[in-house]
Image (cartoon, rainbow, N blue to C red):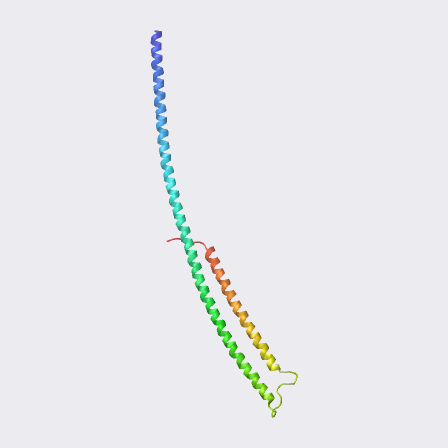
Length: 176
């Protein structure tokens, strides 16, 4: 009977070992399925991240291209405005030159009339106030022209800088 018990014990042990083997095999199979599922999910996540990265990179490049285009357009506009300011300054210098010639002619005429013995002297003997005034006004006009040209260029440069700053700081436009 002891042998029968041994045999039953051996059978029970074999059944327990078989059951443990089945349980461990099921666990192994479940772990393998979980690992395969995790690898699939990881691959999908990595593909999604790569897609988002590519979209973000395209958006950044598009924004940089818009910034560059805005700055190039701003540079062209600024160059056009500076050319116009230079043309205006040259025109003002020509007008100033014509005015100075007219003043010089009037001063010369006043001197001639003062030198005529048949007329009363138009100027006191202490000096030529008309000549001094003409000289002062001519120099003031010349200096005002230089300052106006500088102010125009500084204004244009400041506005250009503001447009560049605004182009770089405004929120990005959505890509089509």
